[in-house]
Length: 120
View 1 (cartoon, one colour):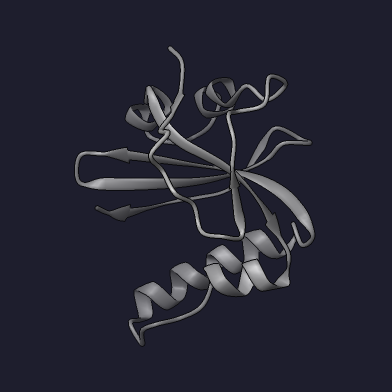
View 2 (cartoon, helix red, strand yellow):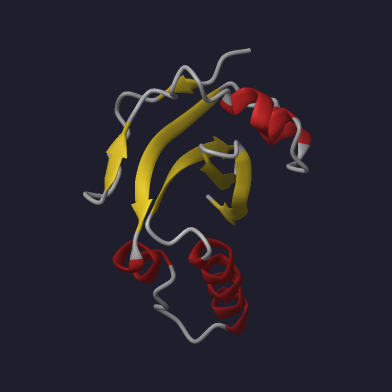
């Protein structure tokens, strides 16, 4: 099984698209995680690297709603990412029927920092 980067994917300007680094085995990281089996066994992912500076953390945790569930999701995301301030993370986006998973990986420790799903 090989994760393939979607060449048509366009990340936000603050993110840099990349092929998974040779030293970072994203498949192995996913396989040893507690992610659902369908995600761990996914064969396609959009992978990019991004600097988690204060501006990027603010962007990915900015609230556009008063929905309490969404606000809680953003709080959890911020809590997970704030410990990575000024670090480069590898983000894998896996789309499955009806759902998308975003997985933030610290390439230095090869650990998942945060993951979440959203309805597609």
